[in-house]
Image 1 (tube, rainbow, N blue to C red):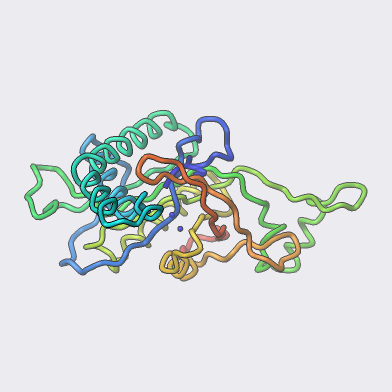
Image 2: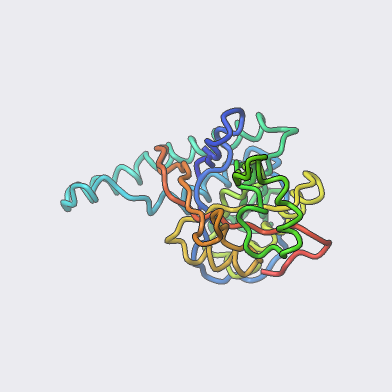
Length: 284
């Protein structure tokens, strides 16, 4: 599912969504920690944004491809690692912090949702100050140009398909693809020590609730990198299905802009979709 925007987050929307959803949705493997109360809420302090930035960098950038892949000498590999630990990591965290804090301010009152999962207790083994919380997960959702479900969803009933045909065809019988801004999850990551505790499911369900009840949208999308098999399996378990092309014969793969170590990259992503109907959200 994986940071940039598009999902700069979404480059497809040329107005204020430029830095929206950062990259591909990612789920990382983890260790178990003792259960404690997890609060899902919007970032409410500078420390929330800074911990969010640190989480994103540790998830997406610590293992980002290095220049040493182009010149795989031992010297360049060690030099790149040294630069990252000395100053590149802190610069990337500051860049990410400013990016998300700025986007949240600009998108206030618009269809943009940034949520963190917070836990009271320790942060990297150190006690947190009074009232402070450790950010152990985050999700970002905004608007992305996506095809109309009646064109791409092979899971819709035949009745729904016929009902929408009049909206998809012109007078000369040509079938047009209807593409409109729709809710899209662009970033999801959980701290490695807190995965397999249902935090990702809670974050996704909160996004679905916002999209359905506040934005009054009938469906939600997510972009996931093809090699992120854990994220693909997670979203399929949560009721998301691959979006299909007009003929229903091929899955939709589209390019998405992501950030890696402060640099923009364009990567292909699978587009998945879930219909939002009724009061019950599927368990993940």
